[in-house]
Each structure stands twice: as C-alpha cells, then as structure tokens.
Length: 259
Image (tube, rainbow, N blue to C red; front, top):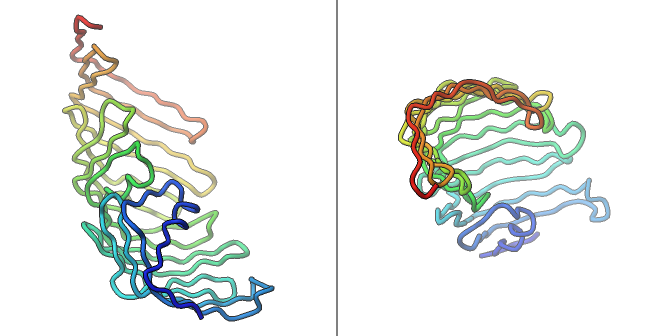
C-alpha cells in the first residue's frame, strides 16, 4: 500500500507528456494498493484513489471534485470516477480499456472544457472559448466507434505563422461511429464570415472532405499587400495525399509603396 500527500508530478508530466505545458505545479494526494507477484507485472492488480488533484494549465486552475477512483484487474484499466472543475471547465469521465489483445475500449465523457487549455499542447497556438462534449467511445484503440457531439461556443484560435486567425467560432460536430460530421460550423476571419462543412472518417485510416465558404475576407500577406475576396473551397483526401480545389474571387487588391 502506497499513501502519498502533496505529491508533485511535474517531472512525470515533463517526461511522458512533453508537448503538454503546465503553468503551475501538479499536486496529488491519495492511496494506491497493489496485489500480485512483482516478478510478473501482467498478473498485478491495483486499486487507487486520488483524493485531491490540482493542476494549472495555461493559467487555468483545474482541480478534482471528489476522489478520482481507478483500478487495474486482469490487465483491464477501469476508471470508476473522474470529475474535474475549473474556470470554464466541468468535466467527468468513466470507462475501461484493455491493455492486451485488441485493446477494447468503453469510455463515456461529458462536460465543458475551457479552450484555452488547448494552448498547452503547443506554444505556437492561442485559443479561447468554450467546448461542450458528450461522447461514448467503444470498439478498440485502433478502430474506435464514437457517438456523441461536440459544441463550440464563441471560440477563437490562431497560429503564430498565419496572418489570419479565427474568432467567433460557433457550431456542432457530430460523431456517428466512424465519422465526424460537421453539422454546422461558422467563424469570423479577416473581417469576413466563414462557413465550414464536410466530414472526417477514421475507420481505415484518416480521410476527409472539408468545405469552406468565405465572404468579404481580408488578407494582409505578404507584407505590403492587402486583398479582400470571396472563396468557395474543398479539401479532400488523406493527411499524406490531399487536393485543394475551388474558386477565389478577389474583390479588392492593393499595394503600398513599400512593397
């Protein structure tokens, strides 16, 4: 039996989740009980209770509400209770996942997540807004079957190397077993409006057909150039082989003397 209090796990986060950045110490307190032969890890069973958990992600403080309960039995991980709260965040999950064989999954996740947390995966992105999720995941790790939806409210995201970001992101994404369907998704960029549609499938590899229709979008790139226009574009294919097609109508174009 292992009992711990105010355990700082920042070194573990840095070693195993190198792309995940925290902005304050990650502290845990709880209890872990192991049963079985140490020489045969596959036969070990474990029961754990994290009575308190506190972390800071992109200056968003996240803490557990109630104990986090988990166990490992017959090489199956069980998550019996997980409830995290914070600024714009109220998330809970339960489920189980097999560690061997086809690695079967059965997970349920519900709640709200502050989109600012997404910045922790890369310093080149900035994001804000609120995401509400309601998901059921079954199948296997290689071929998950997901049902549910994701709703985005007043979101924003930008990338350091792109001249325009997205703001006022609102919409709903629907998971139907092996497909993510854009039910409705709109945003503002460059002073204009952008509507996004299409779908992504992930049963036998990742394939997608995504559409974007923009109106009165202004782009200041490269330096010294300013252009506005309308666009009707389609991106289809796979991450390694895709085709961008469509039409762009330039309605305004200007060069300054420094170009």
